[in-house]
Each structure stands twice: as structure tokens, then as C-alpha cells.
Image (tube, rainbow, N blue to C red; front, side, top):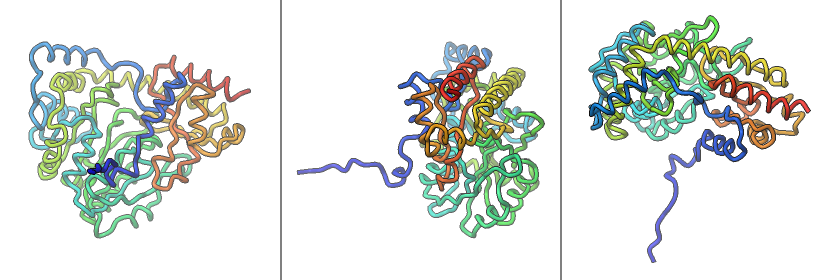
Length: 396
């Protein structure tokens, strides 16, 4: 009798179902306010939707070119120049991808070879480690942790992570989930090590416009000697609150872009044309709306951070991105919860609020078990409702 092997390929076995799917499903089951997955609960600027609808009606409905529509590549180039002081050629250095996640995967598959080492900062967005595995790479970890009132990393640990097998270092600034914005000294250290060891930099900058207080975003590609060895990855989703559009891009010198496009052509080949046209309109004409979105999330960040602090969490106020990392030791001690997974299972069931247990974003899960991650990229009414629910459940 013939038998069929039905199992997950070994490279994917360590990952299982993403924590975002798990917690969103738990939120739906318990009708909880979903502060777990990082998506806004309101649409972005109307100008983008109007441009996408116009493109849909005017016949932009067949395959777009592999690198992306020229209108969007030009818009990305202009945005990059104006917002990040990064000059790039729209024809040879910009590639449109299905969100930043595909940009990361295409970059890994196109530029990382079997056995190459890739340095990841933990906690990390969960697709990073899977993308390294798909490329046959070996992850090396440097830990971001609380350091003098903000998050930071140990210089010596980073130096020790570089070896003769290191192919790339992947950074994410502003950083998910800690909210850390890599400062000038940190970027210079990474850049110097990349030059010294002849290593590439992959820079995930999807939260590039979501910067709070007096912090500033700078792309590592703008540092001396870095443009020719850096892949910048970003997307429409976080900047303009259109996460479901899945329109992203890479910016890289032509010799690196060639590898990215070699992989991209066999992943998605092209991104829906109408959404590319809508994205071009956003980058060109909705910059004021992007600033308004940042102001909205600055307000929700402040309200949620203050409420979590009052509830007994140890709040690390984020410098950027969508999330608050909060220590939960005092709260969990009252509730009898043993770790972040335990508390994040308790919250939807008993408080009607879903959050993320960030230990899943660490190689050593114990390093993250003392934190809970809350998303504040929501309407103020959503944040207010979540706070009321947690107050009723936690202040008994």
C-alpha cells in the first residue's frame, strides 16, 4: 500500500502558526479588543483609495512589470530623497514587493547563500528568522534590552556576532516590538562593523514616519560607505494605515537589486497595479496625512501608556513604531500568571483585551517572558474601551 508523507518541511517546523494569528483568533473567540496584531482600525487617506479606484476603472488590471509600475518606483525614489535624504534610481534601484515581508524574504533568498550567517537583533519580527531559514542561512542573535531608561544593545555582543561567515546584519528601526529608534552612535557602530567585515546591511524601515517626541529616524544607507552595501525595505502599510494593501519596496544598489529581483520574480512577480497607483498617490500627495497619522498615534500612545502604568505595568515608553512593551511582573503576581504567554491567554478571557506575548520574538524565550506587547495604532475610542475593560478586570 502506498503511503504519503504529510508533514511540514524541516526548515519550517520550528515556527508553527504565527503568534499574530493565534492571538487574533483568541480575540475573536472572546470578543476582545484586539491590541495584539499591529494594524490600525481605520482606513488611511482617501486620496489613495480614489487613485486605486480610478486605476481599477481605467484598465490597470493586468500584470504589472516585475520591478513595479514606473509611477510607483518614481514616487518611492522621490519620497526616499525628500523624507530620508536617500538618493536612488527608480529604474535600477527600486523594486516593488508584496509588502515589506516579501521584501525581506526576496532579499534573503536573493542575497544569502546556504550556510551564511545573518545577525538578527532580538526581539525580532517573527518573519525574520523564517526568512533566514528559507535562504539556508544561520541566525546569530544580539539582544535589545532595557538600558538606562531606554532600550539598547551591548556593543561587545554585537562585535562578537561578526565572523568570517557573516553575510548580513538585519536591523529594524524604529524597532518592533521595543519601540527603540536606533540612534546615530548605534547606526555608526553597525556601519563600521559592516565595512570592516565586508558585510551587507538589511534595513527594515516600515515605521520610518512613526517617530515620537524628539527622536529622529535615519537610514543606515545614508552613512558613509553604506549605500553600496545596504538594502532598505519599507512599505505603505504602516506609514499610511493601509496594511491590507501589502505594497512595499526595496531600495538597493543595482548589483544587490539584481539578486532581490531574481527571487521576487518567482515569489509574487508583481503587485496589483491599482494598489500600486494608489500607493504612488499617497507617497506623492498625502504627506500631510502621514503626519496627521503620527499625531493620532502619539496621542493614543500617551493615553495607553499612562493607563498601563496606573494598572501596575512597568511601561517602556516607545520612541517609535506601533507598540508598548510593558513589564508585567506585578500584574501577573496578583493574577497568578507565570509568564507572558499565561497573562496574554488570561487577558482576552477575563479582561476582554488581547495583547502579544513577546517571548516568541526571542531565540531565548526567557529573555522576553517578563514583557507584554500592546498595540496603540487604534482609534482613541478603541484604546479607551480597552482601558476600561482592563480597569474592571485588574482593579478588583
